[in-house]
Image 1: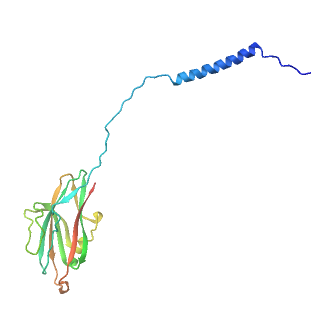
Image 2 (image 1 turned 30 degrees about the vertical axis):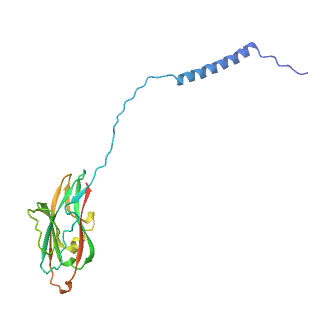
Image 3 (image 1 turned 45 degrees about the vertical axis):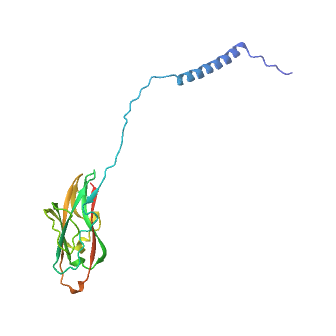
Length: 203
């Protein structure tokens, strides 16, 4: 004979109803708690900016060469001056080096002396027609003295001649004195080409 389950008692129904109400109250509390307004305040520091410095170096040659000398005779000498100016915003060091051109027949017999100082500047290209003296030049440092071949061993900033410390507005005059020192008849008609380069790197 099948047994019939007794209907839930009032007490059981009350317990279930109480649990449901408790759950609803808890959910309502959490919703209210997370959406409640609160006092707040901020402070900031605006206008921050970063600008890189510069390394800028120029000379006064106007794009002309220091030397364009032909018909050299043994013992001939020529000089010319050039002013180099640094206008970068970073402190830097300037060095001098050279690059050999297409011809280097006379490199071993051209003696080059380079001095750094004040006074004078680039007047024009030194030609066979006569010397362009560095009027008013006063030497402060001897940068290099030796053959053009030796000078050309300095091919970049790392191996360059001179250690001229510069800041914005620094300028100096470089005097180049070149002498053709040979008695070798086989060098008749020989030529040499070179580019002089000043490079600044920030320190």
